[in-house]
View 1 (tube, rainbow, N blue to C red):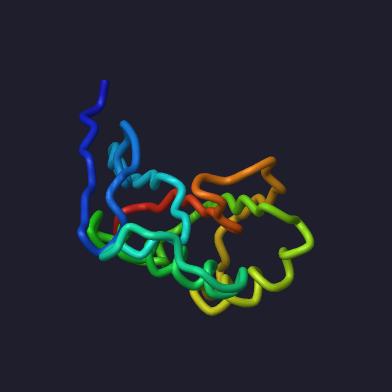
View 2 (cartoon, helix red, strand yellow; view 1 turned 45 degrees about the horizontal axis):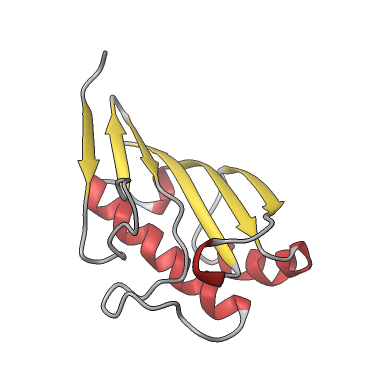
Length: 128
């Protein structure tokens, strides 16, 4: 079995359970889902879904940087929304963090997200 390496950065919220911010295996990074937790306070960012999406993507960027890659290295994301009606609003924020070729993506409405978050995103990236 290949070696698993855990990723940790203070630039993103600490895990709120028994999981890693990300795991590196081989040439790939698998991130945990990021919600809109402020890494300094550990509190959920208040505001609309756009404000939460911005914080989520900043957290994801920090985790990927700690792993040695960037958003340009992301090959797949999964976006979980508390309300699928927010898709267009979150997609607008999401689009500012990625460029072509865009990663593959799934988007689903979740029954509920941790801490009452409105959006959560995880990613798979390839190490350069």
